[in-house]
Image (tube, rainbow, N blue to C red; front, side, top):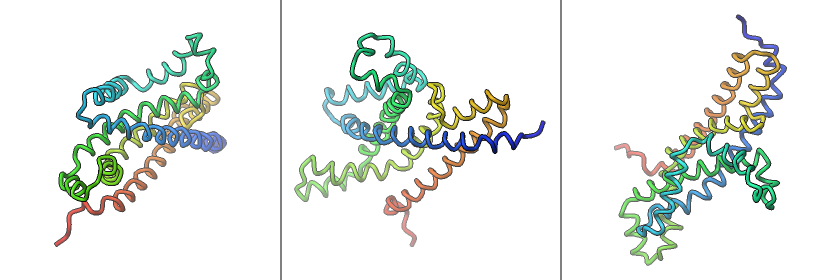
Length: 232
């Protein structure tokens, strides 16, 4: 069996369109997921059980259920309720792109919240004591010291979450979106060449993963340089 290059070359515009869809979904999900993860992380490190418990329950449920189930519940499940279909939200909830972005944002927010909460808990006591010695309020302490420091230290773990989310976006093709995996499914359906179609999709995911890894390595060298061991 020989690799059919002609089919793949003819299908490259479809794959490139899929890359744009994948990146769009990924960036929207990460942006809204991180925006939600920050307050969740602050709730997770709270000493009050009334504040901590809801955030813990949210992250536990989201991390404890498969991403595919969450996507199906949002895209297919909500449509069975007449109240949802008659609500002002229905034009959005009937849109595959919106539902995919919402599901992925909810999913990554739970994982990102736990990553940030762990970084907040690992803040060196000296940083907190120095900030308090300067008379900073609790809000200022979090805004100027704790959150920026935690976000920097969380970069290595968060980079793994971003890459996992990139791969998770392949589920978007199940709800009719033509992302990278959707392009591969289309090519396979037209030409019955699963090896060529999905191998090409894998190559695109590998390329995007490489780019993301390099970007995060650059960010770590820039913002985590102070944590590197000093050379004598």
